[in-house]
Amino acid sequence: METWLNRHGAVIPLVEQDSARSKGEVEAEIAKAIVRTHREQHGRGPADVRATIVRDMVLARYSGILTSTEARLLGTEEGRRLIRSARHELRSISHREAEDAVAAAAGRKVLRSYADLDVEAAEMIEVFILDGDLESDLHPRPEGPG
Image 1: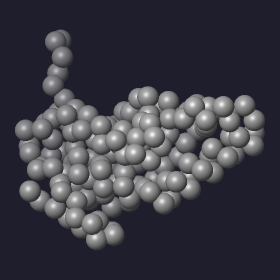
Image 2: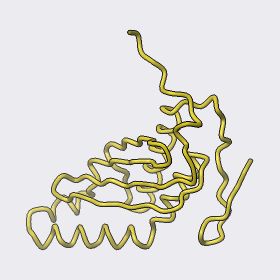
Image 3: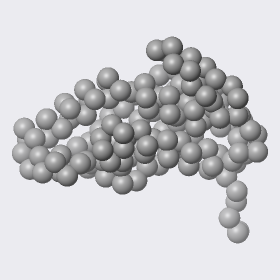
């Protein structure tokens, strides 16, 4: 099994880059890895995670991200500011864990990532930049009956 050292010197096992894996299978693996990471960081995962591979990027959209305490804070502008601030601060100190989880599931190194959130919509997006074009290495999603 191939491994790599992340920016902190931790060894990250990479999933074998198996050309038999479909794009949909890898996207599902990435989504599961993201849910696990969020569960560890927030005590619960998002209600829905959609991961989409686009060439050398993974686009991830999370909905239903707020904890019950955060949901109560939505009622005031100060509460919304507090949620935004806390979520941005938490991501700034823990984004490498999400990057490592995506790297392990994708079988590619993550070079960097970006995120934004909409507190009112209880939604967040992250973009993970990979070290190469993962999409062209994978089989397309199976076609449905047509």
